[in-house]
Length: 449
Image 1: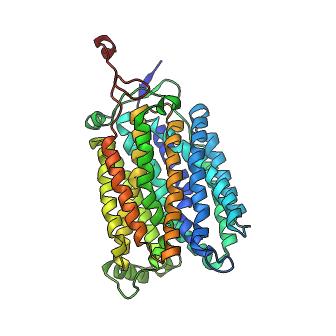
Image 2 (image 1 turned 120 degrees about the vertical axis):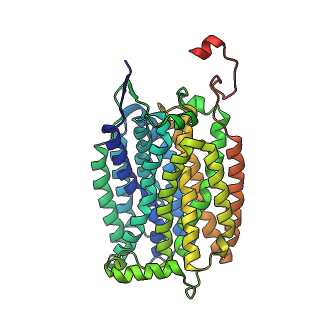
Image 3 (image 1 turned 45 degrees about the vertical axis):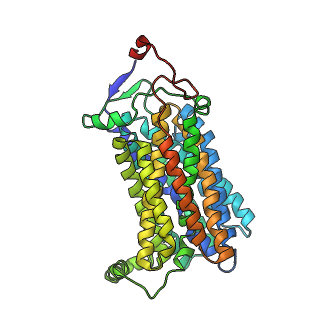
């Protein structure tokens, strides 16, 4: 028998544990620092070679989400998050013994990517199940913000470790920490008991009207017959590629900044680090590091803000706003030639890029329910794998060939405008649709039921 109860207490413990797990899984977003080290002695890899393990990891991560989501839906989140932590940690440790791009593609790319996929597949679905549908956007935003926030501490931590450790020992240290912390947090991950029905928050009535509450749950084979799924899948690729391109190439993009041109942001940071010199060991006043950290902070803000906003104005409306603003930012990125302008561009990139990872799982929950959200979102998340390969390799190849990222910025700006158009065309399936997403006539008696 269904029991309606408050989502406080245990539900928030799961959310905080999921947030902590994603903080570790977000090690993927510190790759620009590792990639920069691989371009130096004794590796001397090209930019494309240095980006390749990241591209493989994102692709494997995305594909793994399908199977991990299915397991999570059937067995619960705890076991696969433990497995994910051990695999990501093991992938980092074995990457320490790499000598070639191919070997690191197998260790960090395949093993590590699978670990991230197993862990990430459980965090959002398990957390959403504890809360009323009117809070889907907010809860998704909190949980996925951990991935974004990871780059804020992971990039400077990795850079700090590299000041007194080799790249090999740095990877071992990060891998051991991951293999310990993620399994411990996984002990707190659990789905609600059978029959659990979260109570509707007293203050969420307005949001509930906007968030497509009460849609029936659909299995993955039904989801794949709907036009909404494919519209979201293509939109995901087009919208995520620009942010990934900036993120993975941040260190090298920052090298194009004119060091003689500084402004109030640089001066404020310079004064701050002079006041707290110990922090300079972890966070040097380097354009690349500050850019990665800024992108991470605003990536987190974008995930939280988009969840709150989309609960009120709708998922696709929020997508359109984010994509158009991001397109404008990309068109202007070639003109960000000073430290301050680059920080502004990174902040705007993070804000709009982060919105994707809140809006997409929330939209899937709106359209197809939360019961099978693990596997359903896993299918959609394969788009991130395509975007990861496209975004990371696009920027690197353009830079290797032309010595500039300008044409890459224009390309991804056009992609974002196309994503905004698709967002406009994507609307939730109406009550009374068949498995293919087409509207059918519903009798009065059926409608009341």
